[in-house]
Image (cartoon, rainbow, N blue to C red; front, side, top):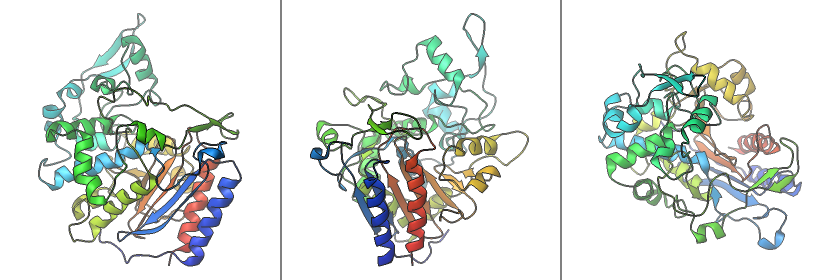
Amino acid sequence: MPGPSLPSLSAKGSAALDDLLKTSVGGRTVPATYFGATSADGPLYFNCAGERVFGEPDKGEVTEDTILQLFSSTKLVTSVAVLQLLDKGVIDDLDNPALIEKHCPDLWKMDVIEGFSDDGKAITHKRKNPLTLKNLLSHSSGLSYPFTSPLLVQWEKETNAPGIWSGTTEGFLQPLVYEPGTKWLYSVGIDWAGIFVERITGQSLEEYFREHIFTPCGITTMTFYPTDEIKARMQQMVGRDVDHVGKLVHKPSIRPLDGKVGQLSGGGGLFGTSRDYLRFLQGVLASTKGDGKGLLSQRSYDLLFTNALPPRGADNTCYADLARMAKGQTYHDPSQVEAEELEHSIGLCLNPKDSVHGRKGGSGCWDGAAKTQYWLDPKTGIAAVCATQILAPNPDPFMELYNKYERTLYDGLE
């Protein structure tokens, strides 16, 4: 997928984004927000506005140096790390189940849970389908999260499992809730991909990311460790007093910010600035330039925008499952959601057709729990962020701002 001619943002477009940001944050319906866009050559736009601690202006305004909890925006970084191992010949094939059997034997031996007996014992069967890195990276592995699977919730209760924020590998070790390749379900699969990276390289994710991803991109703030210095620069988390429509209120983080980090979460553990995340996205886009300065080979870059789910058919419900999730994520083109056209690669949710909001067909996106949204558009040659720190279910007013930002950005490109 060769890179297109690189776009620029008109002065009128930049002013329109400035106005949208100022007006939206000033209306007090969304917390402090960050807009950013980049091409493979460098940033096209960056601005941010709002109080670092909502409702406490004396604590200062956010800047490009304000730290965010990135949560699941971590996932793409882990996917890039796995692809780098493919580029270097450390691994031979994302479809090779022997890699999981050898390097993640604890996960490999987990059974598939079907339900529970009257006395609360799990009813399971041995996994029949192979389990691969491609499954883990595309959320088709059989794994889940407690908030995506009632079966897992009950299993964690019955077994007193430590959970994903325990800082232990055991917190990610869970039975499968379906046969790999038969469903799509958001999961800890990419956490296991991160564990795989650590085990096969002998480095922690912090060390690997720093050496092979962050330093090459000029990134200085992204880390798994919420030190006192990191916490002092963080934007405070907010929620709503009433879901979807309520006023903004302070809200505690959903993960511990003190104590020993332990097992690093490749699915949701990073902290960092939105400006540095944009630098990471630029590094991904730069893979198309052919000068060796991007993070990936052209082949691996193309894999980020290639569907990794099994073919549509009676033997799987992947596309219906993905569409069901996307109905709540209002940044997707509604017509593509309704038609179950969305796809998923080994790192991104893909829209195969042009979106009414602006991004072109073949674009990929994801986000973090606190609405650190991003997308990459290979046809246009841009990547963008629209980020904040709010823990609130969708639909949410911030997502309306995200749609407006995307439309305004594309309208200003030239």
